[in-house]
Length: 306
Image (cartoon, rainbow, N blue to C red; front, side, top):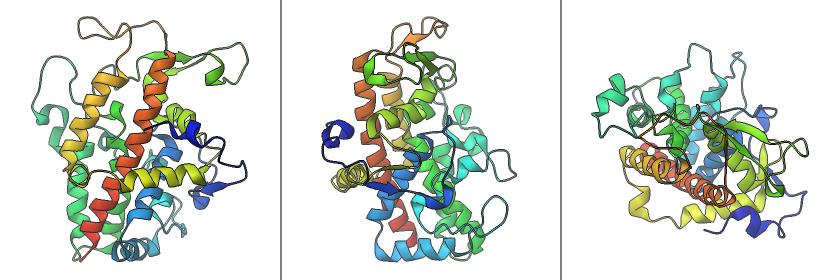
């Protein structure tokens, strides 16, 4: 898929934004899977692909939604709740271990129990939360929270470095961007960040050029079109297959950098990301966001449909 930002740059007027989550305006950029904009993009794609019954069920479940302070949130869509699980960090509802799997890159295959202890990992929690969401006998508040976790974790699983244990999912690898293509805050300076943070948020910014909490309408519509054309069999694969697929992307794309090897410790020096690597990362990010939106919609259409 041709990088969306470059394909649409001449087509999208600066004044044509799509606000993904007005109720959550002002969210800071930080190291979370896909960042607020990426998460909301996945939610917005799924919103567009929900069938009428599932869409009505989402609105009904969110009818009594509260923000972190306990006040009515006004959130009514998947896009508006997509980064909820990152915004509750440090609260009693927070479960940091749920946001990732820790599949071993080195040392051969290990049993799931070793990287998903007691089922506390992203793919296992998606399955558990889906069962809660489908059970109409459960309290509405419990089903609503399950919905919010599902929306968030489906996106998390599609971020490749949330599926691999190497160097704490890339958090211990320092990288930098340079050159005119990357536009750093201070001319002449290199912007340093972790490899994980690059895949969380920076690659989304490079690919989609968001401003604040929105991405251009035409860009989002292109992602939605890509999601609609995803192979149905691939979309309907189980979450365990999603995680394995993202793990392969982590191994063959995200960690495909000089000095990264199972034969030596993670590199201590800062790695300058090659231009070709960044271009490939943009394509993978766009594809993963569209695929995550398609799979999220399919899961919810089944869980909330007839």
